[in-house]
Length: 162
Image (cartoon, rainbow, N blue to C red):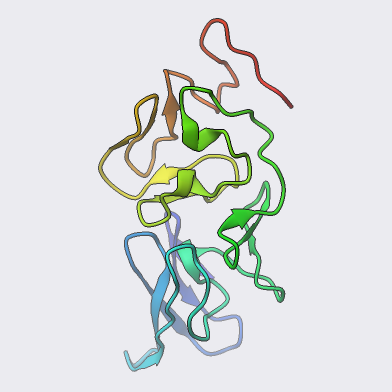
């Protein structure tokens, strides 16, 4: 496996070089042989449900298991349902409706956000503002009223559930 940043570029695990071509979300939309000849052209619905045969690393560049669920480090994601299989360890904020359902995948914005950790969404480019919940460039975690989830600190008057 070879990659650049978070993008998978080359897979040689079967002894045959397979090159991955990705869309803006990081989903594999084409695999090619070393000659450049297309080998697969996977397709997905907006929540990542496979519409065609997909490579090991498919929707949002993540790895699906034999049951079809996607491993996102902290939790398993089910693209068939468009939801996580377990509850988010962090409670949502009442003023940010998309955060209240703790099984929701990327605030129900799967065409604009990805969640490679199973905990927090990333914007795939630009800025998305949902009132009290905003998402910035791909390298920045989402920001809720100045709260950085990596710091595990909440604005004054807030508490978190573990």
